[in-house]
Length: 574
Image (cartoon, rainbow, N blue to C red; front, top):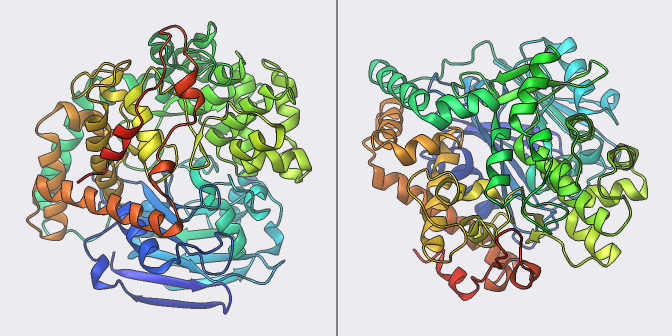
């Protein structure tokens, strides 16, 4: 992976160049965030010509390192106004890495009304007209392109929401079966891609796991050891493969931190009806898959393939999606959750933001709480671009302002997912302080707060939460740079041999002599770059706060409030 491809959508010039030396040791989030700081004006219009969209495989992507097929995309977010890195699985990362690309950068802006396709092969890159894809949903876009270019190609795409530049539009990616259900979901990167006039990227690579490795024997030994570490851990080797991420539904509900009815209480009586055990049963009963790899080479296999009642194969339902369209909306039907998920995947909308927006709209009385049929009809408006559809696509903050709702669970304009910060306070610290806007994956304190992985920090107490979140945010930034799935963190936190084994893979692949301290330093440097961009964009410490209702309203059943304020300023002191 030593090539940069720059695609200028204004001039239609494609330029392949050697990766700049300053990015040689970076991949994934480390590369996208540093690049955005270097080349994107912090005060630019996110949907204008000066924003840039960058895709970067992780440092280990394209190899047979276990669960290493994640990719980052970055730019300035139209949802938050700050820096954004969004992360996805699927087939593109391994394929892009095997074509030798360290990064693909989309620059400039096509003339209004123009729509293009970027085709990448071993022979080079082409920018082709894609008018025939205009308005098509994600599932059809992937089907059409794989019929045209080959079933083994990887596809990155936007749906109608991205074409219409809705602020919470995501970027989709094909999965192993050829469904468009994997997503760079958060922060509106689909709107940025749509603003460029780029509908899709087709990656045609003959190989998946053949990226050059300096010391293959050493790398294979470390890779095999890391796979065993993952498979031996009770979370990554048992819980996630059996029930997927939605295994968390009943666990988080029992902990009293499951946001219900737009964050008014922490438990939902019907949580099990939309939980992981019920989902696995439904997947198996309908001929779907209860266990599924989100990308080639994943050993944890925490995804699933859900079949709708009409036989439609929609792809996966993740925990955060099941929460947003389930307990948060007081909906207890997996079929309704699945239908809403399908609509969002097809329209190209972030399901976390969409779920939080639905809760706000229900609070406003636009859609009744618990009314799945009404929710489905409302969400069908997104792809049509109607006023209601655009409100949904604009996100929870916009919907709250439009309807005068003050219980709006967002930070920096981005929705808080699936874990209430009043009874999972480590996650609350992360939501408030990550440069990305509210994002559970930025520093997943559920590990120690709820699951007792890597120790235990009482989720209803303030003590230890700042240190917990800080350390997790640093570690996560580094993991996001490797291409490894974030869930490897469960094993890394509990097994002292895990991190050295990751370092060993990196050293064997690149002929380096990194240490664990270097990994920590990398994570710190990424966060510094992201915060520097946000500072230039006008963010202050006052933006590192939760909405005031979390401080003023008690959450049942623990009857707790969030109390950390000034302490949040200490999180990024390193």
